[in-house]
Every structure is written in C-alpha cells, then in structure tokens.
Length: 176
Image 1 (cartoon, rainbow, N blue to C red):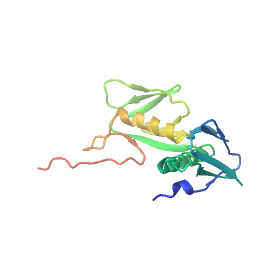
Image 2 (tube, rainbow, N blue to C red):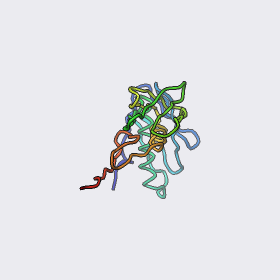
Image 3 (cartoon, helix red, strand yellow):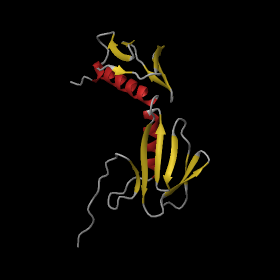
Image 4 (cartoon, helix red, strand yellow):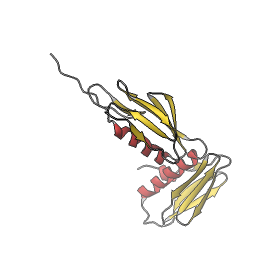
C-alpha cells in the first residue's frame, strides 16, 4: 500500500495555500494554481508545511494520494516552473516562431500552426528542439501531448515528434 497520502508537504518561503469552497489556491512568486479539493478531506497548515487528512472514513484512499500529489506539484510549480523538451527527428522537420504561435514543418505538404496554450511558454533552442515551460504540470503535459500527436514516432526509422522521457518502440527492418 502506498503511503503518499500521509506525507507532509514542505512549503518554501513566499508560498501560501488557502482552501476556498472545494478548491485550494496556491500562490507563489511564479504564479497561482487552483487545485480541486473534494469533500471528505481537510487541509492542515502549520510551520511552513501542509498535510491533508481524511475527515470522513468513507473518503477514497486513492483520491487522497492523488490530492496530495497534485498539491505537491502545485507548490513546486509556483516556486520553480516545470519544463519538458520536445525534439523533431526527420529530414526537413523544424519549428518557426510566428508571434505567439509556432509554425511546424513536419513532412506534410503544408505547415501546421500550433496555437499558443495559455500558461505555457515555448522556447525554440534550435529549429528541431523546443523547451516547454509552465508552472502547471498538467497543462504542460497536455501541450506536449498535443504537439506529439501531430506526427507520431514511426517505429522503423524513429522519425517524428519526441517528448523527453517518452518510450519509443523501435522495430527491426527487413532482413535479406
């Protein structure tokens, strides 16, 4: 059995968490995040640390662990932003910044316009390497997944949009 839910979450200087009507508002130097806080749980804050306790015995243990993990990510996000790297593998694959949006050339007959996601900053290090940054881990993962969906990784040559940490199944080609 996991003991994630019973952990005490340390809050750095300048971070405040306040429960308001089924939500927890975490505010810090890098931004503000709203975490859903279901009934049956209680937030206890003391000495720059936070702990979530079960108020009701019928409250779900799985939901308890998820709530603690989400709160921990929110506290970390308002102090230091999360970041993921996305790379393009393929001849002619590249990204070009156009205002807030990004124009992608991914081997199709036309360029694809990747719309700006609110709360996500995209930096183009090289034409084939992007860095996504956000204080909200869930929004960051969604934006990276949307981009990876535009050109899935091909299993034989490994061409496509690759998100850092993604497992890529490679297959062996034909043998003579």
